[in-house]
Image (cartoon, rainbow, N blue to C red):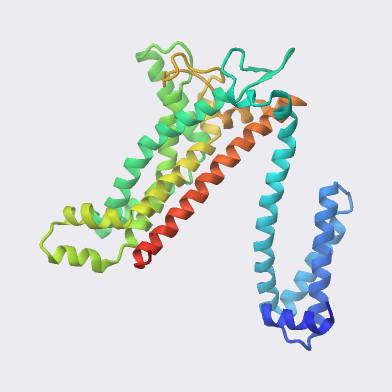
Length: 358
């Protein structure tokens, strides 16, 4: 590529004047420094800081002399970096998980005979109990966060007076800022003790406690996203319904909820993603038994989730054991990615419907 073509591309993309050679030189130097930093970092070199310092110096120079152009370039770079980091994480997880997957084969995802997880002697690594525990706790959490979250969103957006809304909405959002370890500790010390004393559970920790705690943790996410979806329903639709003589509740039930259904569904899916990826609450509450409940539907049974497995064993894992934990991470990564794509698709459908597009 000639210098003239490079100048023209910079002008078209970032608004750089073609005659400003210093901008082109600084941009090229910064790009080379960033590429060198990435390569040296991946190689584990001790000289990674040198090109990184050069990149930071170039950025500083650009912000001082060509602020607008540098800001545009940095935002473009951040977008590219996001995709690259996601790709690197995916590749790294798969590479690290391959040894355990090759050794166990499909049995890692299908084996149900005991023992299903053994790290010494004849090693056995089956993720079936952990996948079942994750599924059960996620379903229990969504049975709590889904209905309560949608009801809370409707109350905040459609029913509550302004004075109440100004108090309730920040309070719900504050719940999202409470550390998950606090939720887990409360669940372990209060709910767990209550169930052991009153329901005579034989072991400490159960799936139903994790489901309750994670459901409460997912509630702010569902409320916030669902409230935004409900608030985005055009006011003309609701006003037209009221003008026809319907009550407020009939308008909410027949107009608002159907119009915002896609957004509400996306909110629930995001809550599911939060529940699937929850770590500390499950780690604190569960008793870490790598086996299936008996009977399988026993929500008061004690097993393991994918996240609690990784959190409780990574510190002592090595070799195939560590690779098996990475395989659990791959399952989590794929699950959350599918949920995220699904929620984005539903949100897109919501926008199309509200705009009258097919």
